[in-house]
Length: 148
Image (tube, rainbow, N blue to C red; front, top):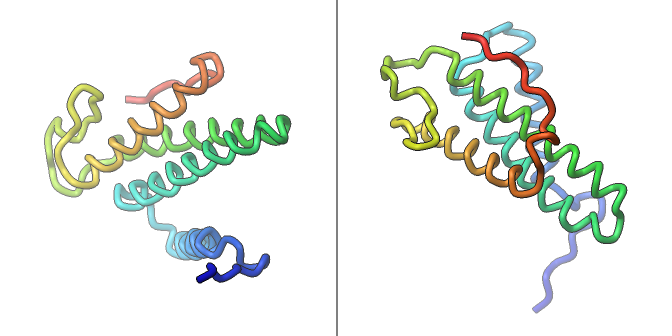
């Protein structure tokens, strides 16, 4: 039994659906002017880290045949990690819906308690390990100053 062939115009339906979902959410957010909350940042962080993983794999497979294109994809990979890092920091800056005390602080030596905090920190740590395997701290560029 052979696998069905996906038409060229429908080669990436899941990426198209995710993009459409993000566009819809951006339009809705523009209409309501609602500030970001932890739930939104957690979901956005999931999208950014998913794209980060995809770009990592695309860079690895593209670079041997097309070195210049692979370098551009690797650069996008790094920028996605930087964006995810900023979203992760914003997540921890926002107040939690329920007071959790110091458990909402991300610590690499001990992951915090709570479902959304746990998943965003795990994703951030995993993406940080992936980026550090392939880059040096000098590649990361200057970090913006942290606010209290």
